[in-house]
Length: 128
Image (cartoon, rainbow, N blue to C red; front, top):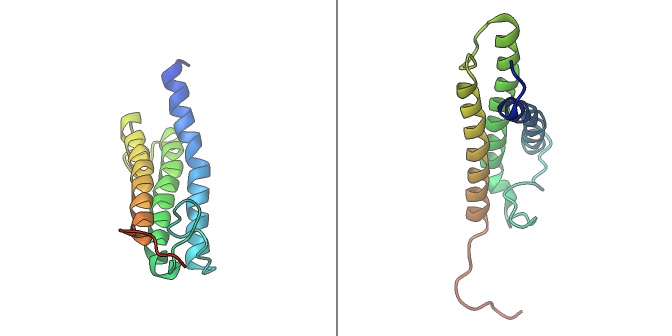
């Protein structure tokens, strides 16, 4: 393997999956096990009025993305070291597409959930 810019980007993508998987699985743990809804459907750092309603969606999103990242983190070194295939990890194109798609889908889905949980108020703001 020749060390060039492409190889560096491969390693950066692979190593960036470690903290992402950790944070996503930790958020799922907090939502499902600890019943901590402080990080559910945040919009500008503020949770919605009823975060318990959006907790299953956000928790499943974090759990799915975290497990996908963990699957990649286990599958790529396993294939390189032993040749055992537990997924599409035989080529860089396959696992990097899976990792990139997971990251982007997680970002967009979090955005959609946060906007659904904080509906836009039409008209003038009421004086209190």
